[in-house]
Image (cartoon, rainbow, N blue to C red; front, side, top):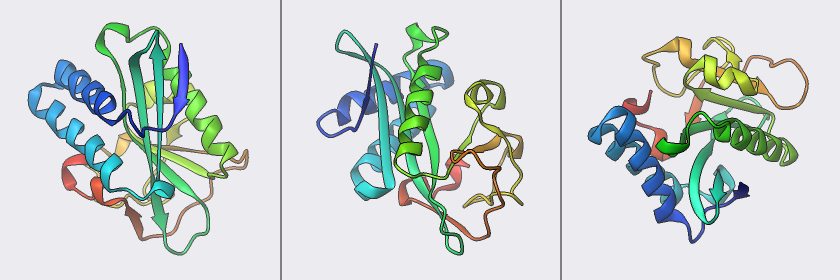
Length: 179
């Protein structure tokens, strides 16, 4: 398996991965929603505000993770949110997602990112260091439907200190459908 960073020239393969994976697990409507999110993130987000990590096996895309910047206007720390992540349906359960996330978190840390947050299954993401956090520690940019899925981690080795309100996200994520 090859882990890589970046998406230029690979946009359609990445969009197709997310669309197919979410369609298989959640239905066509969710597949289209998440595929559209990834398309918009890659097309409309400033290069300094997006990081895309992918996993490949013999030239076939088998996993992807998209991180975009969260801004906390009164805090100098650099914060990125993982939204979304996918491993192709036929390859789930092989450790690809965990390997991809470890690679991504190490790369983000090396780039000076202080905090990583995601909104997902704490039992899965807990395997790579994400812990439940409250919105008093890290306010979300929009109201959360499932606050128990709000999880994060410090990438500096220090305890995660609270981030002050308000929080902003990239335009592609600025939609209640994702929260």
